[in-house]
Image (cartoon, rainbow, N blue to C red; front, top):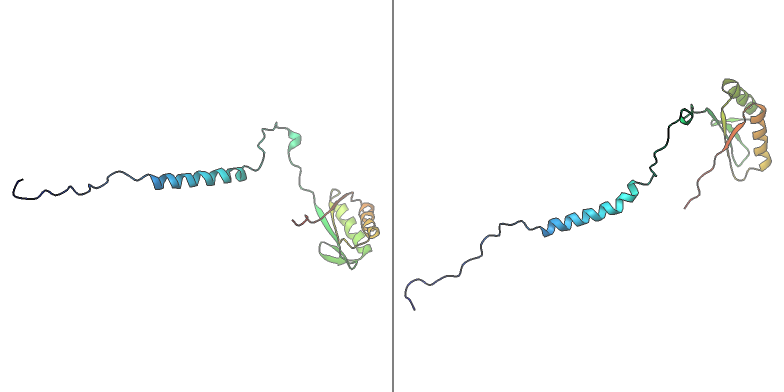
Length: 139
């Protein structure tokens, strides 16, 4: 036994290394996020298609919107008309541009015969492209 100063235990030395555990946790979370979102970002099929002059998109065709409401009202481009006025307007559209498309919107309660009348008026005017507009089903 010696007299004098008592020996003290050494204190903890400062830890000078970086704690990587939180960094690894954050990186794993980011990897999971990328794994989940990658299929959503690549939703289209990537194809290497051959090129052709015929594949060029044609000029967008003009269109005329014809609507039939549940009460039997007839509208062309949002303006109310009757059947003779519709025939006149469709003839004017056909004279201006023969490839004009008639976009027909009809209420589901409109009788089929009324829809056929409108189709006949469009064909008599010289417009043979008729598109039926419908809503997508609710999910």
